[in-house]
Each structure stands twice: as C-alpha cells, then as structure tokens.
Image (cartoon, rainbow, N blue to C red; front, top):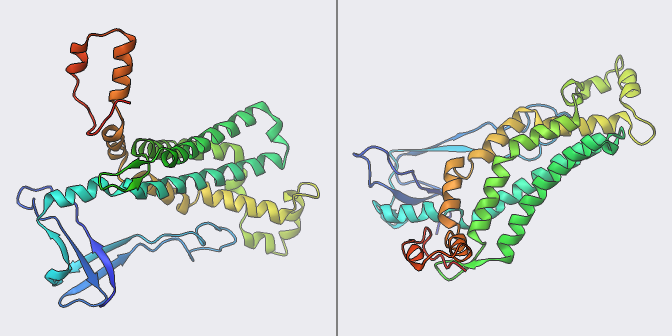
Length: 305
C-alpha cells in the first residue's frame, strides 16, 4: 500500500452554483492522471547570514499552495464527496485539539520576548527602574495568562462528543484569543525595552571587518560580563524576533493561522457556558423562574454548573 502525503479539504464555495461540492480525498506518491503543482512559499532560511538572523535560519515553516491540475482521484481514496455536513463537522472540530499546540507556540514566543527584553535591561542596570519593571511585569502577565489557560484547559479537561478526553474548549479558545490578540502590543512593548539598538546595530560582517572590529568591540562591550560578541548576538536575536521580515511574517501567521480573529471569537461564543452566569444572576437578583424558563441555552450541552 503506497504512503499518502496529501489530504485536501477546500473551503465551502461561496457561489450558489458551486455549493455542495465539498470533498476530501487522499493523494499517494503517484497520481493516476493529471499533475499536482506545489507552489512553495520561499521561506526565510538561507536568505541572509545566520549570525544576523538566528531565528529565521533555524525555525521556519514552509507554506504551500497545492494545485490539482486535472488529477484523477480513485474513489477508494475519497473520504467524502458533496457531503456538506461532514465538511462542516470537520471545520467545526478541526481545532479541538490542534489549538493547544498553537497556543503553546505563543507561550514560547512570550518566553523569548521576556528573555530578550530582560537581558537588554539587566546589562545596563535599567531593570532596577520602576518604569522598566512595569513593562516587564506586563510581559509576564501576558505570558502567565497564556500559561494559565493551557494549564486549566488540561486540568479541567472534558469529554468530547465521541467519548474521548479533550482540553476544556472554552478555556482553550479564550486562551487562543488572548495569545493572538495581545501579541502585537506585547512585541511593541518588547521593542521599547530593547531600545533603538536593535535597529542600528551593524551586521556580523562589520564586527569582523578589521577596519571597524576594534571600534565596535570597544563600544559594544559593557564591563567584563557583556563583551561585544554577546551583545551583538542578543541584539541580532531581538531584531529577528521583533523587527525582521521573519518577525512580521510570524505576527501575521499567528493572527490568521487558526482562522481570523472573528472566527476565533465565534469559537469562544459557541463553547462558553452562558448558562452559568445567567443562573448566578437569576439567583442573586431574585428573578422569577419565568425569566429562567425563557432562556434557551446558548451552547448545546451547557450544564449551568
């Protein structure tokens, strides 16, 4: 049996003529007829020196546009065809588990921002200033907010409709909104803490050039602990994390990789237990049971507990 490498699920067609053509199928290493065209996004690895762009050259993902040009798909490889309910089900449950890894990625990005900002502040003693501590605390709150959602989603895991264990959906999706919506302001906060050095520091070649190396070594060294090479490495890391083409690409990726913001908020709306606060206010305000009986659960399966 040949290995399969591609699963394809097109979005629901917008036009009335094309509605109902949802199809999912598998493609093996060879095709019966036609051709598969894979258009790769070039990525960032190898574009520039790894010494100047350490993240772009070490952590890259390649986005791919796959074009099926008159490809014959054997029926035994078709999972479903013109089954819009099945397609809707897959779209609705696609992030039930995968959102956890996505939010976990944001947690590590937050760690990198805190580390880069704190090293930059401590090397000159600025971390002792209250204004700097407040900004670092805001980064810490962002990081711990993500961590709290991930931890609680597992600690309060719930049973899936299929009888499996899944992360608490409300906590997982609210954590995803927190991580994605606050990433841009947290990156800007990190830029403030790193200062203008990340945009004016010369590249690695300048630190190796005999005509400039001595000067850069002199002015980029701070005492015995922070020599010029360590500072150059830190600033190159911060620049690639916050200011480079790679950084801008990752920011947009985090915003749209698991659907656009409005869809993420819609997932929160569908999974939050609206019954619980309604029942709490019903009891606290002494409302009649008529009001409670008129309420329809906003989420299927909401228990109100």
